[in-house]
Every structure is written in structure tokens, then in C-alpha cells.
Image (tube, rainbow, N blue to C red):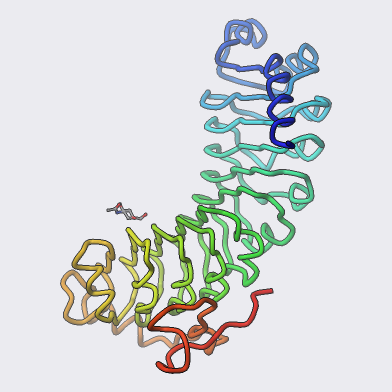
Length: 330
Ligand SMILES: *[C@@H]1O[C@H](CO)[C@@H](O)[C@H](O)[C@H]1NC(C)=O
């Protein structure tokens, strides 16, 4: 019922939708012959003329500059899309004054600095901030978030993946953390991301072993940890995931794979190139591996790496002595 009401509202609002691409002629006159620069003043003109604006889609232009604080005066605006432009500087604080916003897309810009924590206290359902230059601890972002769909890839988010990750991402089918500067060891709580189909943490600075619990991502089809500092054995229970189509572990320091994982390599599902696995082709040089392992490496909560928070035939239970049941995540 709620969905139908939402839909009807959307239809009503669509009457006042402002698609910038269609209105480019108007824009040209507004900004005095330079349609490619949305400035605070030009946006103010739109805001004055279109007080009923509900959706603002200005994606894929060459807009730069800042967002007018007057945007907060649009009482019905619930979707703001300024993605794929050249906006730069800190997070546009004007957005913090927008109380009706449920969809915010600022991805593919040049924003820097951090995302203000106030943003996460809003009723945002969808937030796309990927492909900017935000520099911030991941834990700070997830700290208060209730956002249903959040994309963080291709920024400079740093620090460890918080142990509370499942609290924020457990409903998400895609967890995209790739191309950031995340560091530290992987928490076993990743195993509680039961809805995840795509988990991508490629190209970060993550280290330590892969927790067995990852094998509990029952819906996972694509798992990417390529280009990190992970090491140890690749857990067989992870290679045994039923729906796995692409497990990318290349460019790490893994040094062991069992028969199930070797089967995946043969099938082209597991990419384990450029690691330290003896007997496999395309591995790092012995010198490179020795240099890596000559430094002491340590993850706390050692015992948690064998936790298995789901039932897995052949792996679960005391018979193998390999795994332990896991405590609740939070
Ligand atoms: C598997 O995933 C990796 C990382 O996301 C990607 O680069 C690669 O192209 C994928 N391989 C296939 C066969 O889809």
C-alpha cells in the first residue's frame, strides 16, 4: 500500500520534474551564455522560479562550483542528483538543510574532505558518494547510518572495516568498498552479510587471513579482494560457496589453497595470480614473498577466523574440528 501511495506521489511530482538537459535553453539565458557552469546564483534563480521542485536531476554535465544554500528552501525536493559533474571542495553543506531528501546522488565529482555526520541522521534511503575524493574513516560513516543503499567505492576512505558492518550492510545485495585505503584485518562479522551478491573490497590495504565466515555469504556470486595485503590459506569453505562465479584474490600474499579452491582455479572462477602459492603458475617471486613475511604480521581475535556463523555440510560441527559456531554479531 505504502508503495502505491509513494508511486502516486511520484507521478504527481513528476509534473514538476526539472530535467536540466531538457531545459538547457533556459539555462543558457540564465547563466549568461555559459551553460556549463552551475553557480550559486544560477541555482538560486531556478529555486525562485521552481518552488515546487521535487526531483532535481542535473547529472552528466560539466557543472562546477558550489551548491546554493537556498536549495534547502525547496520544501518538496526529495531527489537530488548532481552526479557526474565537476563539483569540488567540501561536501555541499547546503544539503544538510534539506529535510525531505531521500535520494542523494553526488557520485563522480571531485568532492574532498569528509561527509558530515549530520547527513546520516537524515531519512536518506539512498546515498551515492562513490568516485569522489572523500577522506574519512569508514567507521565514522557507518557509525550512524540507516541508509538502505550506500555506495562508497573509489574514494579515500580509510581505517578498518568495522565489526558492526553487517548492521549497516546486511540488507544490501552489493557491498562496494573497492579502490579506497581501507586497512586492518577482516572481521568475521562479514559472514553475516547474508543478502550480499557482490562483495567488492578490491584495491585497498586490507591484511590478515580471510575469515572462514565468508563462506556463509550464501548468495555471493562475485567476491573481490584483489590488490590487498591478505595472506594465509584461502579457506576451502569459501571456495565451496554454492553460487560463486568470480572469486578474485590476485595480487595478495596468500600462500595456500586446498583441493576445492584448486578446482575453482581450473574452472576460471578463482583468480589467485600474483600471490605466494607454491606450485601454482604466475606467482610472486620468492624474494618478494620472503620480504613480505619477514615482517611480523598479526591480527587480534585470532580464534574468530575459524568461526562459522552458518551451517555448512562437510565443514560445520565438531567432526572436522576445523570450525567453531559463531556468536551473534552485535
Ligand atoms: C571477476 O571480478 C574481477 C574484479 O571485480 C574483474 O576484474 C574480472 O573481470 C571478473 N572476471 C570475470 C571473468 O568476470
